[in-house]
Image 1 (cartoon, rainbow, N blue to C red):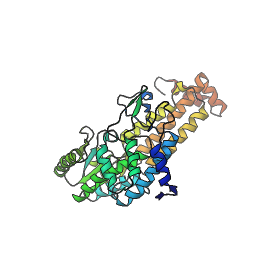
Image 2: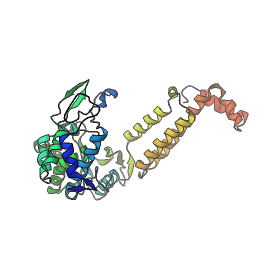
Image 3: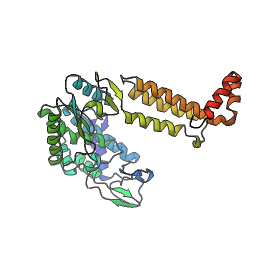
Length: 355
């Protein structure tokens, strides 16, 4: 068996006998993933299984094999972590359904999906299209590898290890069952990983669909729909993959939460106490701005984009002025600004709350 030029037979035989974690000494058998949750000061922590180089290589080989076997059978409305598909396509499908008259959305969020995937059900699903016992045993070992927390290895009885190349394809295998159930019921939907929007024509239909989908996710997938993050609502009041739509014409616009997150990042980069040179700040801003523009550049409501463009330029000017300190007016005069304009600008920037 080969996948994309990788001789999988030999690789899997070696891996089944030995996947060792180079970062955990004195510990045989499969690697214990080390979560960097201790580095994240968050109220809710999610352990990430960061694989070593050897483990990442093996997981990538497994992911390529599983993807080749399952990709032709995945539902066309599944867009996450699939070749030739993107979040933008998922958002565009939702937009097309809204314009077709499906004016209500059943916005479903599966609670802690990657942490609560049922191992037994996942292995049963994989066996439907995978006939290689060595491969299945290896996947099962990675699922149950455990995590190292404060020096002790804790067993993982559910969930898929995040942080490696294997978890996305396994997530699609699990949720493919939901996709085809929605298809069987005749629903229009778009799913990206564990984010799913089901489009309906009325609030009553949406509430009925929400109840039935919640039961299916609980009884069949053995997962839980998060009631705090899921809702039946107008699409303009919900966000999907960082986007929302306008009330008139269902034009794409950047969600408020995405804008707030972007502003927090700009504030972090331009914070005075960082002590970075201006050239370094500009280089970091450039990377952030180009990435943000590449993702949200397809937005059709442009006024928030113009506002945020004005805002980040002002933040950069404030950073420059703070670095100049009391010599701000002198720095402006050196650059050809008249005395009066330099004095007025200096007064404006030194006013309380100006920056």
